[in-house]
Image (cartoon, rainbow, N blue to C red):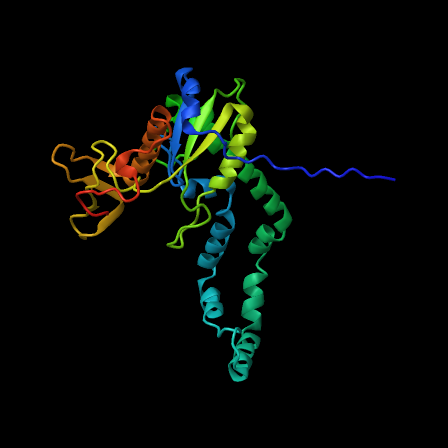
Length: 302
């Protein structure tokens, strides 16, 4: 008796082709996108707050916040209890005694019918979050391939309320040939402790959504957020507010007299990523000199 064992090898999401191999596709009129992990250019922007809203991750937080506001006195008593996470036996016994003394308050707070009705169906909430996550990622990817209702002129809201795009619709047309230049920044989380963008999930969904009609190239993000996209000079500085005199991290201003343009930090990086990719396509995979590591610039980095 003999057995035949085969191991399935997953296809890599990143293409093995070089940028110069895409010249024919560009001449044929394919769509080209330069994407920064925080934003995307031309202008298709999606904030992390919008992504978390589309996925429904904020709903439990809003439910708890509303319950705390309705029962402020009970919440303050519970939040001021001593911590049980201690190695001192005396402090641990004290924390237990405090909880026994507030047993009625704790049970009354957590046995509230309104709170129980929202969280007793945890499995159903997880399923709803999973479904909304699939729709949210699909909606974001659809903006790069087909466009979205969010950017349709007929979809503009008459009031000033914050607009949230609806669930994506099945598009009858097949996606066009699309090339995406992704910035190879840190994908999991920010070094400042902020929430990370779902870049890997987006790449996987894009590959599944488009198949052979999509090619993904990774672009080194070195200096893309420090060099002006118009004049290509590393002479940027953060805008300072007039009243508080604070530097705005997301807004940069070029100090060149011939340029003097104000940029959004992430949009400028996405434009530079696109320029680096297009230059590599036309110049045998070379990189722009101003974005080379070790290149000399007149001004220090921002």
